[in-house]
Image 1 (spheres, helix red, strand yellow):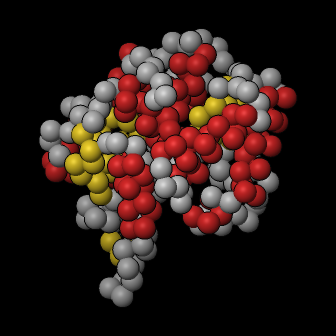
Image 2: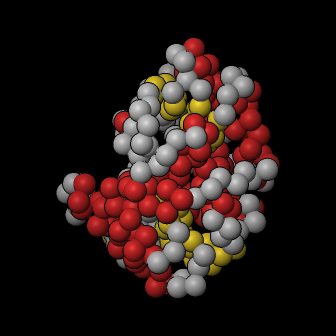
Amino acid sequence: MVGFISPPAWLDPAPYEFTTVVQEPVLTQQAIPLLPDFDFSFENLASDILAEQLCLCARSLQAAGCSVVVQVGNPFAWAHVKSEAEAWHRNDRIAAATNLPTIMTTLAVVDALRSHQAKKIAMTTTFYSSVWHRQFTAFMEQCGFNIVHAANFFQQGLVQRINADDDEEHFRYADLDNSVDELSNLIKASVQKVKEEAPDCDAIAIVGTGARTLAILRELEAIAQCPVVPADTAVYWWAAQQLNSTLLPNMGSFQHLSYQPSR
């Protein structure tokens, strides 16, 4: 059984989606930090209060019978860290609460990229603001990757400012109808632009777990013509490896990717 620690006050499709990517029957459980008014600032993402809640969630999932724990959400691992080792320390704190195999989303991305033996990485940071974009890019460089290109939706010209006086942090999503097809098309266009800017990259990473990619993963790989490592699906691959489960074709190249631990 896989336990998913979902972000506070967020409707998380991961516990259900995971059941659709493995051949064997699998059960999932979900735990959510009891922080309904959580402010997703870097300070709060790096706080002891949140860390304690993540550990409590992990213990709750263990008590429910889970044998693997996945923490969903990108910035929880890298917000305000100064090194990759510091991010792994956050991961280890959650794992120590249960002694179960545990992964935080961004570290699953790191593991997947290294398992692909990818060094030159291009990235779409999707809906990230300029601040989140810069900090995440810096973290990936701390992990030793050569980031040959990185851009968010705004920088790619796929979304607009709310008005001319606003900075790029305020994207105009009002032009989108927020349908699954509309958002999927936006992600596909973003990957196309990344590939055009970095045609020789070893892999393309997609971050922002709100950017759902499972339904279009194989289309994204066809556009990229190289491994695509999205945050929302990298954790499914990682969990399946821990369970020795067989991934289905909807997981694209992850289906045949052997796990090479980062440490």
